[in-house]
Amino acid sequence: MNLPQGVAGLLAALPLPVAARNGLRRRLAAPGRYFHGLGHLALLWQRHRRFGRGGPASRPRASRLIAAAILFHDAILRPGATDNEACSATLWRQQARRLRSFSASEIAWVAATIEASAGHLSSPSGRDAASRLRIWFLDLDLTPLGEPAPVFRRNGRALQAEARRLSATPDAASYDAAARRFLSTAAAAPAILRSPRLHTAFERQARANIRTALCRPRHGDPGMDQAEMVALWEAHCRAEFETHDVGATMATMVPDPSVNHVPTMTGGRGHDQLRRFYRYHFIGGSPPDTSLRPISRTIGQDQLVDEMIFTFTHTQEMDWMLPGIPPTGRRVEIPLVTIIGFRDGKVAFERIYWDQASVLVQLGRLNPAGLPVAGAETAHKVADNSLPSNALMAAWAGSAGKPL
Image (cartoon, rainbow, N blue to C red; front, side, top):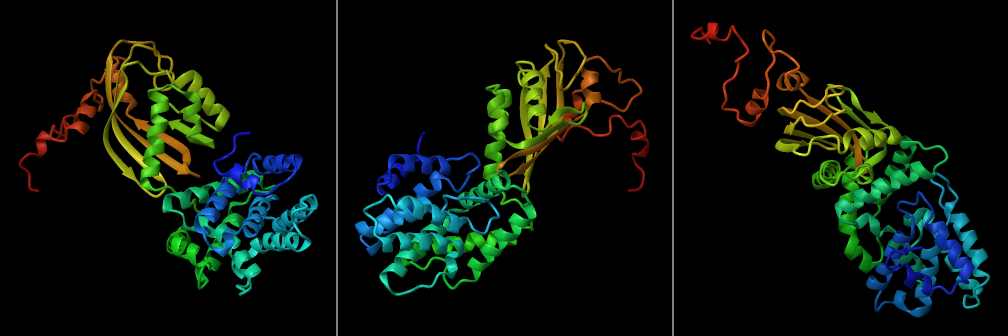
């Protein structure tokens, strides 16, 4: 099993028997642990060592207690359950019986600290060393609130996905309500992080992140910033048109994506149908000289709209765009608009629009005589707004000189 950086050091700090250590690793690396996994524990241990350096928490006995609390506090994870921490503390007590280096009072301290993580901010700030060390651990567990905004949003998406994957009855509204209660409690606290060093490092950004999260619509996705949406969409397009990698394309999408090429109603809904479409009908299903020329891009909260000129020479069958029409060898230029929606940090849907009549005119399959349709001129007009308008309107000349 490949371990995230820092996990080996954390495991080495607690002398668990090999079987117990491997069992804990498997539990924490289980499928669906998108946030509460080994990477989260490694991050907390790294921050303990960095911010605790030279302080009471860095002393060997204290570090050993912190290592135990970090390793076991998320050992039991059932989204929505109210006894995760109590069950994790019970698991710790069972495993700790094998640790001769831990006294009964130390085992009890770790168990009580794990149970206290059920309500980080409700644990009293005592003046004794044991209470201060407990607050240190609880604050470490809250430091992800103070990540840079893009990381905070990414963590939010991971928590949502984790809840959906691991919950027996996934309920977005219940998850959203619980998350808002937690964030509202944190926002109302005089101090989210009560340990001076961690307060200095994370408090300000934590409050900024919480304010932003609470301003989002209820049941909303934690969102992606514009740069994240653009980077993901461009990676998706590279996989489709440059590397022709079906797996990489699907990796940019949610588990239940949809794609609809509106004029031909081709695409798919759901992972399996869309993967089939990409593999056998779309990726590699465009001529080698296909090009996309960007015209404009509009980005909203969770959607992106690209306007472009789509150009190709019809040298092969194109199931997705021209089903049933054999290659004509003709050149095609059309304006094309794609609307892309995002959810949980992935592409959720695509709707692609173009003027199919213009395509058929350019391929010689539709006679434009007497019809209000045009060929490549539609693309030229989009690319160059100075070109004349109203060429298809016979009545246009008749309105010249009339009062405006």
